[in-house]
Image (cartoon, rainbow, N blue to C red; front, top):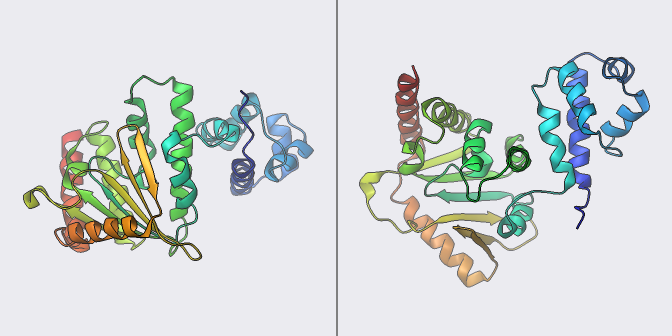
Length: 274
């Protein structure tokens, strides 16, 4: 079965091309000569009306010095690529005004750096081809765009200390990842709380939870396990998930102390990498 074209990703692709072309100080006509494409074709791509082929994308990367960005972005035009059980939650995530997540083992998707996400996506079973992995990778990085504005959504992330200590990809990857979280936290784009090992068992130990609030919709809860995930809309269940989250939050370190711990662990990884 053919995969439908994704108009939203096509528009974002065009917006990204326009932004990077203008950053390079090039007009559409000038870029067209450098990449051997017509100016009209570039205009249609930037407007989200046409899609480039793989060779177009590679030439754009070379001329705009974008390190393979447009080639990696290309697979997202063939429909959004996520695990089937996460599709509904992904739609809610894009509409949420408030997101509060608990992560027991891995950095939440919207906070992952490219290197960290690549390692996570490369580790699944059965093994993925590089093409499939990169398709998933681009989609995951696209999710992080919801953090590009300062105030919406409001994001709180509750991390088990295991997330900081598990060396996904090695010390260099972990140092970069933790410093990314640190930057978002220091600039108040997200609020971070760490549940330290010293707490022992806590109310939300069992698995990943994402709580979301909206302007015109009732809140929902998304819970996830191995190869499974479920969106809960039933008010009583959502309320229970919220209460469990709040209970665990009471055992966590403050935002300030959590950032200090993240900074300390990042420095340890940095020293190890050297």
